[in-house]
Structures are given as structure tokens and as C-alpha cells.
Image (tube, rainbow, N blue to C red):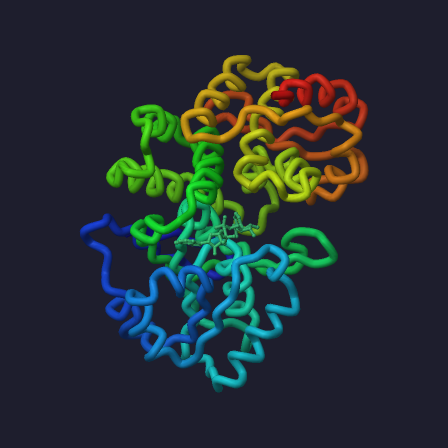
Length: 357
Ligand SMILES: NC(=O)c1ccc[n+]([C@@H]2O[C@H](COP(=O)([O-])OP(=O)(O)OC[C@H]3O[C@@H](n4cnc5c(N)ncnc54)[C@H](O)[C@@H]3O)[C@@H](O)[C@H]2O)c1
């Protein structure tokens, strides 16, 4: 059991990570304070795990099932969830439980943090990305006007219960996408994760190793977020790979998955760090890890700076006089560096040329 405490309201998230033999029955999990919750569930998870979820669904105070599609992560769906809570007569003493990946958890947690000014919340992540990253740290959100997570709150869940067996049905590409966040977390805060990844060619089927990787990722993320819940400083290092990654993801028309784009983003941003005096071995180390977890090291045809420019300008770390970058200078030495537009002009073309497959 891990507990992460948040600065402003003395709130904590109780985080339970179960090994395969120890996972509780969902009905047992939803007892006591968590009895008869309002459930928000990913459609695919409901279908694939019907037998496991059915008793909880039958005893729920209300149910909202949604497709995990980035396009549906919007204010319209949010309003539908509020309406559904209202029709079900949900009162403040009824908890909300969300079962799904990052999309459903982000919007479900936003609905929970705003309905009746805030409900008790438990998250049951079902994707690797959500287990190692999105379930912890209280960022909730929906997309608006074509921009990701434009509307949201900082509202950490009261409880997170991680049952890795849900990963058995996760499509391979989604699993690899989550692995990009694992590589990022290793680089930011725990070199042991690197050794755990390199020690096998089939991490997905190494239960104990995977469990240890998830545990270590949660510890790294928890320790960063506990100190800066509202992303006023240090938490920004968690954006490593995402500045270029988000731009690549959009530029590809979402043909690249989030993880594929973040992996490439990390490689490019490591190149910027080298240009600023960082350890020149880091790009190769990242490449080795990305290869091990099955993520691409380059883009067919490559990409030019002018193709990313307007997308980079929409990054939340862009300021009037430059952009703040999270750059991996070395293992466990990720720094926030503000680059002027002139510095970007000097460094980015060379760095992006490294991404040509
Ligand atoms: N709040 C945060 O701190 C944070 C951090 C990182 C990412 N995010 C958000 O997370 C979202 C991406 O989340 P994600 O990568 O977890 O994916 P997701 O929620 O989009 O799910 C990916 C796909 O896997 C399916 N799926 C989910 N669990 C499954 C299972 N157990 N078996 C079979 N299929 C399953 C879904 O239906 C969907 O098709 C983005 O919207 C991103 O903005 C949030």
C-alpha cells in the first residue's frame, strides 16, 4: 500500500497495487464507504470484463458507460455524465468509481470533482499508461476547441486500486504506448526501471517485473507531484518528451500513437539537452530502451521544424519570450530550461533531423 499526500488540503490518495494472486473481487473492493457507487466505465472494458464487473454494475447507484475516444473527451460528454448523476439522484454521500484508461479516468474524475462541488472518488485504471501515470496526481480534464485538456481541475482521487490483470486484454499497441511513459519515468527519476526493462525481452509476460516497474513509476510520479500538485514548477519535468511529442502526434493526424510520439519526442529533446551541455550518451540510451519496448526510433520521411512550429506554440509551457523545456541532461537529472526562439532556431533543425528513419 502506498500513500501520497497533497500539499493544499492535507488530502491523500491511498494507492493499492495488487499482484496477480492477490487481486480482490471488485464487489469486495466496493464495500464499506465505497458501497453502491456511481460507476463510470469504459465500454470496451465493460464488454471484455463483463463477468468480473457485473455484480458491481448491478448494485451501483448509477452507471455511465463511455467509449474511450479522444474526440469524446469533451464538455458535451462531461455534461452528459452530470445529467446522468442527476437523473440517478446521486447525493454527496455516494462515491464515484471510474474504471478505464486515461480518457475515462480524466473525464470521470473531472465530473466527480465538480458535481455537487466534489464527490469521493476511486479510480481503477485498466491501461498501462493509466496505471503508471494518469491515475495519480489529480489532473482531470477534457479537450476543448481542438486543444488537449483545456478544461480541468487538480483533484487527486481518494483511492486508486491497481489490478494489473486488466492488462491481459489491452491491445499490444496500447501497451507499448504506456511503455513510453515508463521510459520517461525511468529517465526522470529511477535508473533501476531501465535495468528492469533491459533484463527481459518480454516484460508484458513477466508479472513480477511488471509489477515492480509500475510500483517504481508510481513512487517517482508521487514524489514529484506531492511537492507541486498544481504544476507551478518541478512537476513540469513530467512533460519530458511531450513538447515535441504532442506536436508530432498532432502533425501525424494522430496516425502516431501518444506513446510513439512521446518516445520520439524524448529522443529529440535529449538531442536539445546534448546541445546545451548534457550527457551525450543519453539519446542512445533512450533509443535502446525504446527499441526494447517496441517503440519506433524514427519517422518515415522525417519532419521539419516549420511543420511543428504552430503546434509547438500551443504548448502550455510557451511564454511570450520563449518556451520552457523539460530536458534530460542525464539520468535522474531532468532540468527545466527556457529557450528563446533564436536558440530554438539554432538547435531544433539538427535535432529533428535525427528523427528521420
Ligand atoms: N491525468 C493525467 O495525469 C494524465 C497523464 C497521462 C495521460 N493522460 C490522458 O490519458 C489519455 C490516454 O489514456 P490511455 O493511454 O490510458 O488510453 P485510453 O483511455 O484512450 O484507452 C486506450 C484504448 O484501450 C482500451 N482499453 C482500456 N483498458 C482496456 C483493457 N483493459 N483491455 C482492453 N482494452 C482496453 C480503450 O477502450 C481504448 O480503446 C489521454 O487523454 C491523456 O490526455 C492523463
